[in-house]
Length: 606
Ligand code: G6P
Image (cartoon, rainbow, N blue to C red; front, side, top):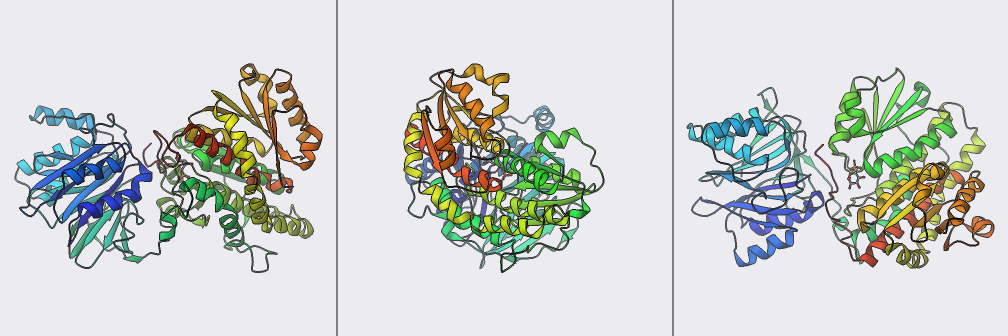
């Protein structure tokens, strides 16, 4: 959830670390800080509340010299975002940056307090430095003190230690949170991910679960969870640095929305044969071997999975359970034989999704769809299918949602074929529709001005309802989630048929009701629900196609017309107006679109 960096460099490290932290700011932006070892081998630190720019400003007035250091950008778990609670934490000669949660910190703190340690913060992290200091006071060398400290910690964490008096030593540890080690020329780096290290090196060693590592400028020693020396490979990774700029857009979110025709096209063609008439999927993925699919994910990834439930069930006759990972992992559900468990995650690092995957690993065949091939979820699944969205920087997920849907659509067709539910003519019709998606997405993007105008009316509302039926119901949930996340307007998504069982009580002339309704087999039913809203003065924004607008567009507050699309793929197309509505409502409200308050892109804590 937080981002961490460590550098043993040849140059001043403060500016290098601030640059690296910028690339990690998607993980959290409540506060930031760095610590370095200066030319006299003294440890110093600077910390600032709020975004990284505040730390940069502080460093202009109060620079921090040194060629070794650690840095952190925080998403608060224990303790408010104050300077005292900001990382790096320090106790005497040791400083640490931490991502994750130390679950036994209360017990450790009580024990350390009994030994005379004083605590100044509300964080769990402070117990790490207090513990390390206590081992140093017993005369242990930094390396041994770190080893003993790590051994006492419970929970999920990635850590990097820096010691006063040691300008060629970092100690890093990984348990439950990812950590990458970068190899330079006479330099060594630690980062929460390889993207943070991209300008510094592309030669990366990933720590495995339970590893800890001792770094100097010219050496890397890794010790595994069995306390054995471990050899981990150096991978040369390819990083798309263009992903890191906004490409002329005002926000990363705008750029990522606009990229969808291209990346969705790539996601589709990545899994179709060269002529587009068949599949290009691993042979091991044979859906005739499964009697059910269990889909597990969080947030927007969960809603992509929920959409595909309709597809797998309707096209392939394959029953699908869909679960929120944080609920699934503690429910300990029985997994029947012949179940495919399917994990969806943009980052591939979401803690709850990863824990759920580990629960399923010995009980089922595990398939993952992720956007980061080097991520923990991608690596721990039996099979990972990349979604080809490219780096997604905006905290609110957009292109990863539609790319997941595109890959899921291919999988649903593959399942239908493997299970004999689709003849070749029908399959070819569906595949041709899938190949046509980029063009239709472009047409939807062409309606951006009309959507932006409608969003102005939404931006002034206190509450907004989104309605959909069938596969448009999960999209109603996603539309509401997007609006909440970036404009802070309270929004709820409902299955249209459920409206009269409660939410209709909310409807009055101040509540925009956004109805996502292509003219499909369920259209008339959705329109009836829409009429119920209009009969109660509800302000309906109907998003439909030309036919739908003709038959049901009268009397609405506004009607947005989308291109015609085969029913099956409508959720992918209608994601565009849902995303653009949220985006333009947020513009109208002046919120921080790429880094909305309280959120983080990658949730690596429970
Ligand atoms: C966070 C992000 C969401 C994302 C969810 C799941 O809450 O803000 O946009 O959908 O995590 O993330 P994942 O990386 O597993 O898809």
